[in-house]
Length: 296
Image (cartoon, rainbow, N blue to C red; front, side):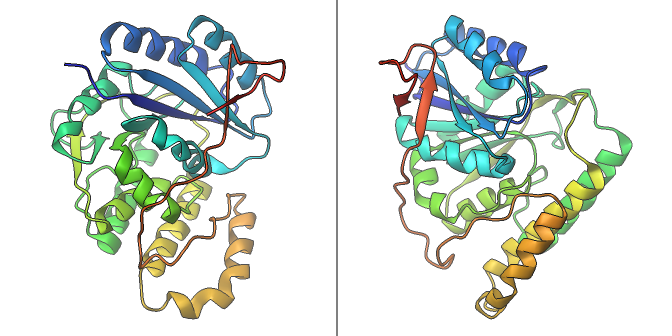
């Protein structure tokens, strides 16, 4: 039986040194082991290095690879919000980090469980998870403190909201997309909480993970930004949010001081309706015409 058509997003910010083996490994694995249509879309997020050149080179060998490019940094969450506009192109859409922390076999294992839920997420903190290189002690401590805060604020009962390996059904993404507004690394909380509120089932399963060197996470600044964002999400879904709108200039100032992407404006969160987001322009290695563009 053929597997569902699958679109894999990989957000990338200055990843020229790490992304090539990740792309080749994913493309080669899924070309051999996946029975349904499969494509990779790299979302280039304000890259100042040669990440695009590396992606173009790999795409010449693997036609399943395409890319979106945004000249200015829009954050990991912003990159995923843009990439998820392509959800209509596949039955299932997921994402992994550009550093290769999640091997393709582990991501495929999540896709295989999609028949059991509307969203399947990998977890590093459930029994059975395989951590080849665990996080450093400071990052592990920050992760567990953040988890406690998220559980206190949202009661989602998810052990690992931040693992960079998730896959979802198309219809779930299309319904909640307009309510995804968090552009920084707290995007996952925004996504999962929207899915929960819309009544979609989330399945958390143990995964395989290798913590990678060269992380772009700056522990204090990133943690403070994510704390600000989860508080923002909690307030959005409270009766007090309308009274806080005059404080939005202050909110924008705080994000800019933290050198973090400012959250996007969104519709009234109390009414989640089906969304049909506009699809951005995709690039691939063999596009029609001289412009080097292909409309997705």
